[in-house]
Image: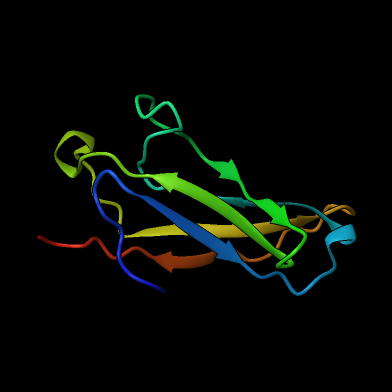
Amino acid sequence: REGAVEEYREFTLVADVNLPYEDIEGVYCSNPINIDDSKMTLMTDGFLEYDFGKKVWIKRFYMGSRQFLIVDEQYLYVWAVTKDGRTSEARKVELHWKLF
């Protein structure tokens, strides 16, 4: 973990999968309660995008106000699905909110 999740800031989830990109159908995450790129709409579970330069899977989140989101989530979960239909065990990632 680097840093903490802050209100009105973007943070990035990075996942390293021990299979080649070519074997992966997708890498997915249970989104924390956050706002989409419009900075107005709540998001739902989503997928990570592959960064070919860094060879990792990435998802960016924009966090709104903790007060208006109401729910402080402490964890999100990440899992991968292979092209032949296998699903990995979900990995729990702890979120650390920056307290002011």
